[in-house]
Image 1 (cartoon, rainbow, N blue to C red):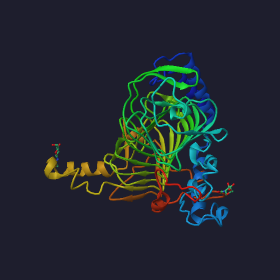
Image 2 (tube, helix red, strand yellow; image 1 turned 30 degrees about the vertical axis):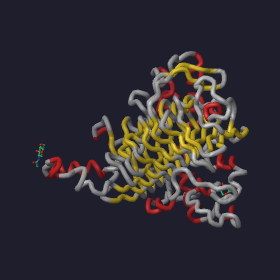
Image 3 (cartoon, helix red, strand yellow; image 1 turned 45 degrees about the horizontal axis):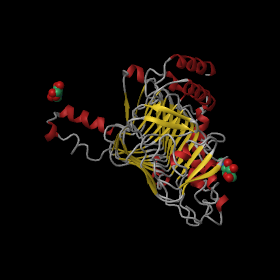
Image 4 (spheres, rainbow, N blue to C red; image 1 turned 90 degrees about the horizontal axis):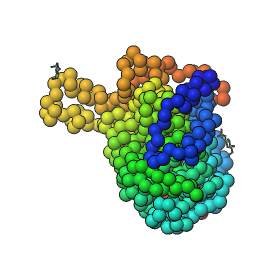
Length: 455
Ligand SMILES: *[C@@H]1O[C@H](CO)[C@@H](O)[C@H](O)[C@H]1NC(C)=O
Ligand SMILES: *[C@@H]1O[C@H](CO)[C@@H](O)[C@H](O)[C@H]1NC(C)=O
């Protein structure tokens, strides 16, 4: 395994990377890319099953109340946290005095993300974004470029319209708890060649592509950026990233893209709506550097108006666990270039009226076999691209404990999960079934947290 990884990393180094949005790929960016690659290699876990088992065990414990509840005895009256990430902090009435507790709560591949835990607080008080090269103190852009760890919070509810993409430096938390903070109708967040970021509680929607130009990316460095695609959150060559309780909808490009050797990522408790291409993990079939990609997608709600890519994966390893898929129009989970996809305890609800609407016989003049094909395509959870069955039958795509409704079906491939590595033996507890998903995902998107009360 180690040898294989070294080989992959060496191979990846020979393939020129996408220079996404970097106008001049100079020494500054080359160094950042090099450091990012090193950090990603350190984050990569050669035993991804460990991470899966750890998460599943905590889901079991949080549901049976053997841990977490006991800790909060006496002060969690009214606390409705229903999954282990939320159980870790939401029941504490002093969540506001103790915001950094959140940094201990990530599970899954992004569990090492502590964001700005070791830094000061920075309060964003100004929603403007007037200067891209010399941002005003008090703005989100000014906070995001500061050196060293920083825990960024907000002084009030606000709508932030970013003129161009917001570039972040390492070791930051953006924590919107307590207020309604929208990043909307402009550009959004780019996490490029940095490490250790937590994004919590933002509303991100109606994001448009930006023209680029001179943009500050850290104190003391302004560089030329080319056009940005208009992603909701763009993760590029970055590691140890946790996105939690964010709502995302209607972005010009992907809602969340994680590409170019990104790894160590958890996307949890988030709510996705109104969007075509939701999550892209790995952008190129030719870029083997994405073999390092390890991502957990847990406790999210994929809701109204979504079409495809929840997620679409290349090369890497993705654990999709206890999510609620209530809407999709083309497929839920897709991929190419032999990714590993472990789907456990999700609920997949296929489009309810495939027959009446999308595959309407009268409208499309379908004959019988076309009608069946049309419906099968709609209700199938999975989609594999650019490979014959003889090839993809070896990709490890496994479904365990998923609940399938309205005819939804998951086409499995590859060898079954290794019972010795992933099971209820010894210290491990099995994944929880999809029937518990409505409970586990009851509070997706930003929470309405009030001071001095459990959230
Ligand atoms: C149980 O709670 C303790 C105290 O917070 C924590 O250190 C420990 O990791 C938890 N164990 C499990 C299995 O959740
Ligand atoms: C249905 O229509 C398609 C495309 O026109 C055709 O190729 C196919 O043979 C037809 N099948 C039947 C059963 O008529």
